[in-house]
Length: 586
Image (cartoon, rainbow, N blue to C red; front, side, top):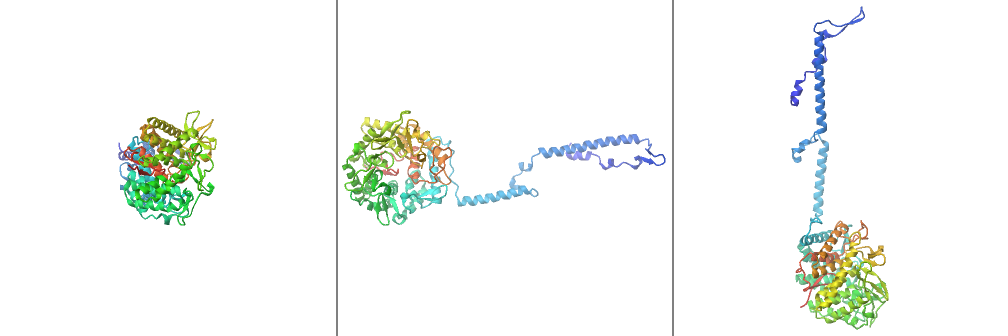
């Protein structure tokens, strides 16, 4: 029986709530008694009324039960199950109406925000890319995300603060806005196929005037490897002569720094005045990794342009060093600006202030098609001396590393920068004709690559510190707060890249992928990627700087390690110390 039928089956309540007057009792004032009617039907009538009242009560209770059940068990807004929201009209429900208005306003605001701030390119889930192609695509999307942040918030600046969403510049660039990220990134943009991003970078460089933009004292070394090197690489990859012209312009502006008594260049130059000098903290001395990392770019530039001045300047440095006596075959970090120059304090390192000198000895030999035998000989002599005096193996886990040397005092510290050496000796092995020597350096490269991986694996974040120690209590870790940071350095991945190309051992790709995941987890900021202040913190603070070499080096090596060997094959290309590829002469 439906609700309509139930309603009509219940008698009208008014018929039973009012009794007829004939049945009402009366009071006898004479006898002071209440007299009830003596009708013959009274008992029957009263019995009937009691029955009907019971029916009424049952009916009322039934209706209440139905109402209560409906209130508690039927879904609110049940019509939404059968009608689409956009086709319904809410008249009475002010809450729903207000919610609809608020939702509409939010959608409008979101649309405006998306128009002003393009939605970042979609990224696959970290665990979803389970093959080389998927991982390579993921790295490409990381590059685009970082580039979009720079383009939006720091275009023309040297670098980006991804969390502050503003420009950044360090002292190596002076205080001018010279677009270091654009020039450092352009070859990577081309290699990974970000065509629109490459075009906007190319268009900016076409209007680029380095002398007008540069202000204050610039690092000669950093300007050479990032600007001259980046522009030469763009030319080598594209054949666009605009890049070659710009590279020559930049290198020409650096030439006054080479006007010294010995030919060893000053460390800093002011392009507006042409005045050059050494670092104040270096006590008037030049630094091995800086004056020793000129030849690859300058010799290549002379080869491409036919202008001999650049090769002459770099060869002069080589001549000076060849003529100098090396203590125990080693190259000290500091050299005086005298003529003839003298070595400074006997500090020796495979890392900071020395690293790329050894790298360039090997790579200059390779870049010339293995015709520059002097650089090959001097490289082999230097590495042999370092193996003899500075190469150690830890007691606990047999981890190989190059220690620092201060006179005869050994400091058992290995720097992140020095982790490049694993890749360097592997590249040596790949180009060495003597099979015994080649195997020796291949094994050493594997050991260095393993040690540097341990420095990553033993941290909380899975990212290695700036430097780490080997003592009786710790190995491949640091207890020094000042050494626990990471600034997006590429050297560890660089070594894994060379090891992958040489061995095809899948663990090197997996290690690189682990680093990708950790970058996403700990280094990704609001509009790009940032260094972290302590790799041993589970929730590390970011330093809010997206280094230009993130594009030039780390992203490039990560992309290449998941690419086929025919993308920049190592028998046709050689990388400068900023990972800008130059063609090998044949």
